[in-house]
Length: 74
Image (cartoon, rainbow, N blue to C red; front, side, top):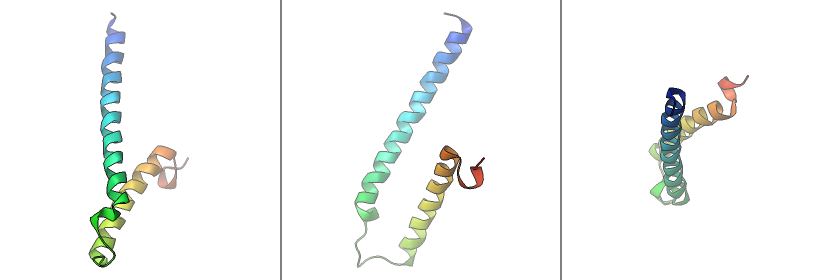
């Protein structure tokens, strides 16, 4: 095997590992969202809103990068 093929194999392995971790995180977030972030309507307060807005902002940053939107628009 050539050095270039070896380098590509390592990169591919690292890519698959990162993708697998992202998939697992997305699955966990989807489950948490389906459970309304473990809150009930009677429990909701402004702290919950702030936390959810923080999550949303981080996810927006990621989706803007991934889809070339927002400040990452071309």
